[in-house]
Length: 425
Image (cartoon, rainbow, N blue to C red; front, top):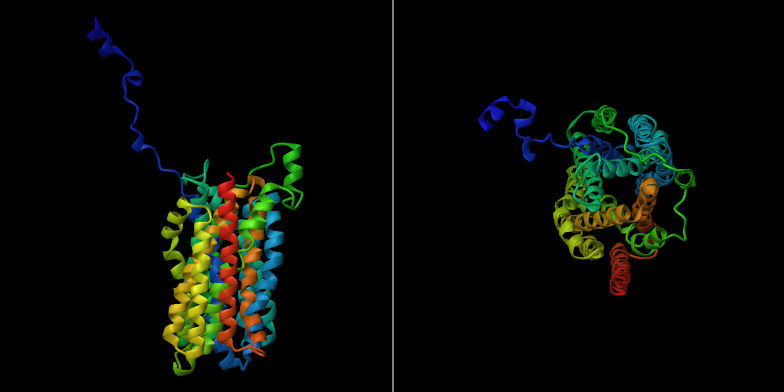
């Protein structure tokens, strides 16, 4: 009887369930979205590697090239502050496509620069606007696509740090590619920008295949908050942001800005025709070091919430000290070592900031709070201009030593607050 029942049972009942390891893997939408962050980093750094070429070929002064480097930040701020809230209200995808188009237009204006230098100024300004909007919308998009229900990242910190890695990849490859093209290709200040146009097109195609992730308002109260445009200053996330994230944020890009825009011009007198390649190498190894410290950043974050930021600030301070030595001795090798240490500090600080923002921000305000972080971070790109202004009174090594002291002061303040908060819990 039991034998007969076993042979006549419906196949759907007797068939074993598939083992868990045969389930279809979760789609990696965040990988496709990551290319918009790479395009943002590439657009920022392709110009940095050409500063020496602009001085030599177009006769621009050091003050001119430093100001062109800094005007990028003036475009970034409205791009971030408008792009973040807009991405929270309208979604990540529309803002990303608008920003990619703006960034491509900016690159086209920079390509006209050798014929009409006046186009360099709006080109750099629009580069900042496009990059800022991409940072605000792209960071939130990648974080959300990495987390359930779209992804399988084990925790919000891992999801948030992915956007920083994509950005660093763009920083590293954009500057190096531009410098190599400028060294050997014809019409270097035109052809050096062509790869970014290709990358922007690829990023747009991949973004078109990536789903929207912005959480839709589920209630009138939620909708009102999402459209308010601010993270209210009296809320706990806002207080924590001011205390623990805001002091660290400017050092995120003070470190690479010094490496990109300040050090090469101080040490390249003996390079004899290799100045552009040397600048490109620095723009590659600095964010490259930031990528390499990512596993270390994860390990530190698992031990203590402030450890990543504190270690990053310590690396920035050390890198500035080595930079002062390189400036005093005009040694390209020492400057290259400084850029590696500064890059490690950049990577740790950006990992700390994005992890903290992901932990603090409500889902419907993630892009907004992320945009605040990036705004404060990119103020660090004004550092070379400030250094140039201060050289009227102080020597460059003395200025770099003073910056190192400020980094140590920030380190002490953030560590004290973090330790005190841990004990209070």
